[in-house]
Amino acid sequence: QQKVQQSPESLSVPEGGMASLNCTSSDRNFQYFWWYRQHSGEGPKALMSIFSDGDKKEGRFTAHLNKASLHVSLHIRDSQPSDSALYFCAASEMTGANTGKLTFGHGTILRVHP
Amino acid sequence: GALVYQYPRRTICKSGTSMRMECQAVGFQATSVAWYRQSPQKTFELIALSTVNSAIKYEQNFTQEKFPISHPNLSFSSMTVLNAYLEDRGLYLCGATYSAETLYFGSGTRLTVL
Image 1 (tube, each protein chain N blue to C red):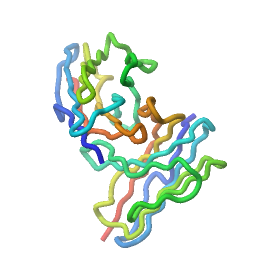
Image 2 (cartoon, chains in turn red, orange):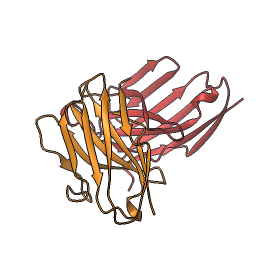
Image 3 (cartoon, rainbow over the protein chains, first blue to last red):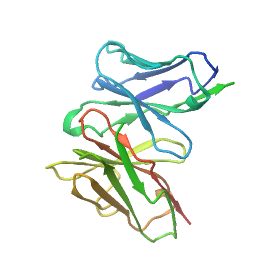
Image 4 (cartoon, each protein chain N blue to C red):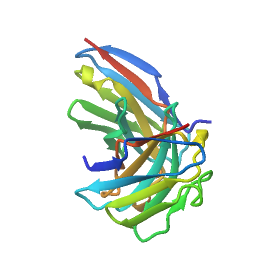
């Protein structure tokens, strides 16, 4: 069973709109979450980390974590065509010296159309 | 975010031959370096995690004999894929962390095996 599940598989939003991506873990040991964005031909770029319950906002990006349900979401407001990419949720049991041992979801393809 | 440089960006090798790839943390000292492989289907597999003052830890299905890693200092790591075959193809990603919070990836080395 996939330990980190993302939905939807793909998403299309108009330019200027809000994009909402979801991620759920089935492993209660996963307490630390990250969102990565990958453009075609590139490596994943770290967008945000979230380790505590509630919201974390960085510019147009807001992540929300609910540890009780192991659900994390990413919301992108005022979406731009340059936001079109593959978005990955990643989870880990630990940070510190063992940061690097991440479990990734299968990704959500976001397309922002003009 | 932190800059991680990988070389080469892409490489083609004949089945049964070997190839070496490099990873450089630019402007920071990486406390941990993780090597991942992203399949053509975009799934991630952790190959090994190298942490300061600790031995390199290989994940199940990956061995030092097949994927030897050198991590001589806090800014540089290299990995060789020995006797590459079709199942070894993919995007090899190096991730480095300095804050022990977020893993920053390079653009990857894409391996094609003929």
